[in-house]
Amino acid sequence: MRTGRAAGRTGYLHEAVCYGSDEELLAVAVPFLVGGVEAGEPTFVALGERTGGLVRSALPAETKVEFLTGGDVYGRPTAAIRMYRQLLADLVADGATAIRIIGEVPTAGLGPTWDWWARYEAAINHAYDDWPLWSMCAYDTRTVRSSVLADVAATHPCFATADGGQLPSAGYVAPETFLRRERPVLPDPIQAAPPLVELADPTAAQARAAVHGAGQGRLPGDELDDFVVAISEVVTNGLRHGRPPVRFRLWAGADRLVATVSDGGTGPDDPYAGLLPCGDGAPGGLGLWITHQSCNHVAHYRDADGFTLRLTAGRPPLS
Amino acid sequence: MARGMSRYGHLCWAYDDPLGFAVRAEEFLRVGLAAGERVWYVTDGPAGPVRDRLLGLDGFAEALSTGAAEVRSLNGTYTSLAVIDPAGQVQAYRTATRLAIAEGYTGLRVAADATALVRTPAQRDAFARYEQRVNEMMRTESFQAMCGYHRPQLGDRAVAELACLHPEHNVDDLLFRLHAGPRQSGQAALAGELDPSNHDLFRTALDRAGLEPVDDELVLDADGLRFLDHRALIHLSDYAQERNATLVLRASRCGVARLAALLDLPALRVEVSR
Image 1 (spheres, rainbow over the protein chains, first blue to last red):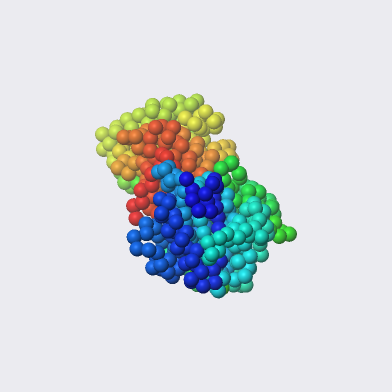
Image 2: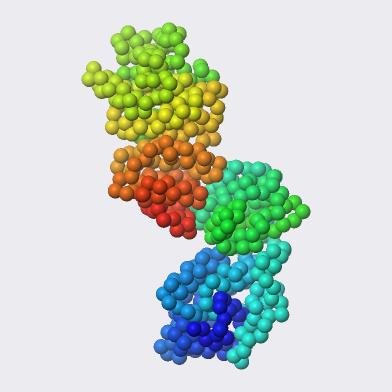
């Protein structure tokens, strides 16, 4: 039995909280969480350290809210989807009929890597719709860029307001529509220099060797191994499902590697490619899903030359 | 330069120029003579020219006269030239090895041009199964071998099917090896790189390996595995499931475990030794 604004709904109720002050955040978050606990619903907080601390201290003592560590939950969008889907499935299997979560994208995700979090926000409308979830995504309008807020409006069907109400989002678009939009991808500053490695129609093994060569000593071994997995998948997809020529370029900075893999095709048809494991056997879908969990940023774009994926390992730029 | 490291001596030598094979075979056998082994040079052609050539090489003339070195025909060495009987051939080499030891040698070492034994798919299938079984035999017997395959006659794919089953080979673009490892480390050792460019070859090699579960587990020593992708992991899990077993991949890198965790495969377990 669902409660509050989720009463009578099936599937996912996805709201944004765009707050201009801490008081405004608490005015939405505290009744939401207390209401969930009072109704016996599994209720979670997945906010960052500062906002999570604010909420924790504002909640009545003994409120049975579970705090998820924001940094771990929101490391990578596809990993967050995987974790949440598992959590939701487990809760429902244990008998939950309603679940509440308030969370936020980490500060680092609101900068140059926002594009993959925007895709996350769109995709979860579909990805969490199998479960009786009511969630709120918190955004601080004092610090978040207006372009990010425009994406928030486009990916959340409604806003929760401090007076306990809800406003529909006029800018909301269906997730498939949002995900099919071409988004501008700004070059990483280290792409201003010529690439360290440039290969035309490489084998996956040649691309892996290039990444190993450039990454040794620059990235921790585990992170480099994961990046090699990602590169191999993306080059393989380009060779198998794209159109020639496949071009691989690699740049190395002090704290990161950036690689682009382009082909002459139009990229995957599935708008959720990379965010969800393809359930329908779509070409390359599993590889792209693994890629999104093996890098610290994945962006893609289409232009006159075809389709390009850009992968970043190490520390993506913060501004 | 041959690729791979061997705890036992089983080398695949793919060649284009017969003279190149001869030079490498002589080198291989000379090491055996120096170590007190009996050595056999097994040729598909007439023995005379090979013998004449060996007589002109340091160390071989005396060995040929004492019986330490011998030039043999394929016909006289392999149980069948049509389709090899893997178990019978392994037994024949085991017996010959033990005889050599009984006669005072430290072991038996064979360089054989096996091209004529693997021309058809059926021959190759049986010979590949033999290669796996002889790997297992080499773990306990003082037997070493160099298998020559003439690439222009067989083609790259056929050579790759055989080369990947050797702990050492000289095929530059062949990325992986699957062969018996040290007995205590599992049913087979898997080394190199597995990606879609060699999945089909890998599947064929695995089918021919004839791995038998022990206590419902198939253990692969993947210490020398530099890379494998999700398709290979899924295939390993399916392979084990078909045999009602769990595949245990003993890897030296954590990345394999992370990848396997994403895939949640029912019949695969990764153990990281690092």
